[in-house]
Length: 273
Image 1 (cartoon, one colour):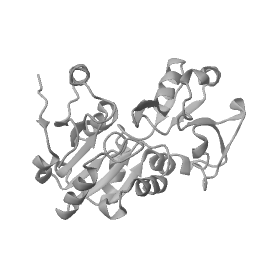
Image 2 (image 1 turned 90 degrees about the vertical axis):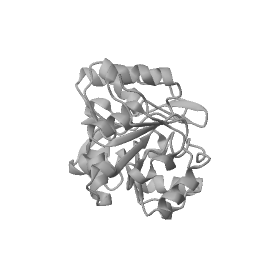
Image 3 (image 1 turned 30 degrees about the vertical axis):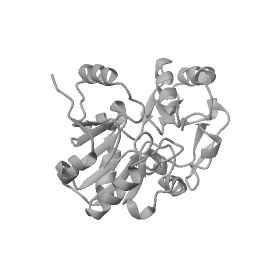
């Protein structure tokens, strides 16, 4: 049986890697503020001339994420770039469509997600070519969409899920994401195409963007076994799980790891230098 390699400080393993693929929600911030020692960690990594690339399942373009990180107090000079599942969805799928009509499910703040693309929103489900699932509005319940999902499944409408995450922690509150809605759609017999972690396209894109080829010198740092750690395993790179996000109990993690045989190389209660 594998045993978790628990570490107290990221400085213990920093010299093993040259590139760090950090997650955002649950690792860098909690949706409201940056975690306590994260700026210090990023500054130390920069001094060591190593690179940080944020890989996020955010269902929006990275330009929006960069603005949000700036609002939180994260200086652009401290990281190399940001890649989101929203970027990958646009580049690898939506950009290739012409004059297709989508049925939108998502936050009102993300209505501009398809701006610049040659596709159009359709209010009538039966006249749509696919469902574009970006998640839920604040405080919405997944069951609200049951009728829509059942009708869509009956006409075999493809769902494009722009965020495979099931949930995130915003402040001290867990919120459902697009992935939870996609799982519900599959329960009703619907077909879903996912973009982002744990699928390897987002990691391939990250490698190309950062211009780095040695997988042995890359560490993924995330808070989700289902997306971050599985994604790293799928792409054959090392990973570290942080217990500051959706996973907080060791027994829960051990149970999932034993069942899936997916283990992080390192385990941190929280990130400290």
